[in-house]
Length: 366
Image (cartoon, rainbow, N blue to C red):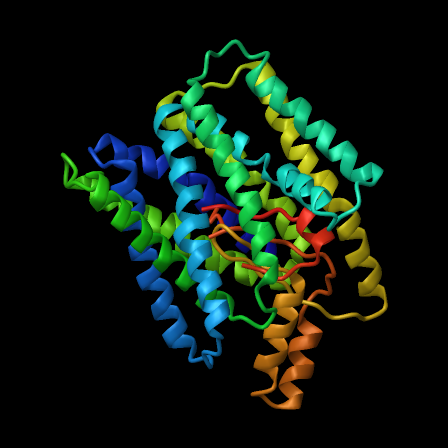
């Protein structure tokens, strides 16, 4: 069931560019679409927070950081990515976005938070080669602005993940995601109003696609990833998330006739291979811990998938409210894992991973 939930999550995030293009065809601007998407997603997430009835404990500093991650990080990343989708093929934009794990690693090494061992250097080399194939050898004549926007989205997300390391480990993930989405909606709304970027679509059907991207391309994938990683572990979930750009490529090919050249397909495969290279050692570590009975859980959020530490701490606080017998049953039913995965509200998708874990993180982006 965990595999199914992770695949559902990857599918939802992977279809988001397709839904966005349909909204654009109805006359919606990027700013209007994103503002409405985040506003509706935030509303649904706050409903989930209320229904779950978990105690809301968040300091002023943490709240300010979450608001900043949403109003700046999430808003800029979303605007750049979906801006790229508006001017270049969504398949190319999705693959370019997936250079963010390599960029996150570069940041971690520069900041001396991770060591550039042979595995990570190999992953960087493979990712760089894939990027060259995507852009340099394809002869596709991709729009320069679209390429710059897609790479800006990847770089912004890498920074987002690095900054999110300072969030407390026991922060409720649905609460975090709700704050981030709300902040992004407000930020984009204010920016759109100031620049004249907000306007009604030519066709009323465009609003239907906004609702679809908010529910199917945001909230459901987030919930699916939260549940899926608890059942299969973070590293397995992260590898399954690698199907997200493949789903984007396939769906836009079927609906819009987008086609990648042979060189671009090889380049995209290389970028996704780099993602797997970064995850495999963490997966082996998780398997070794399972032999000794270590218990751990993980989770994700839109445009940021939190770390194992966050889920372990969050789960521990939740378990304090239930009986010890329930705790034992819950522990017995979870698969152990020690890797840390950061995704994003694909979005995405705050977390508190170690620096080396952040460098190895991969997640779904809304």
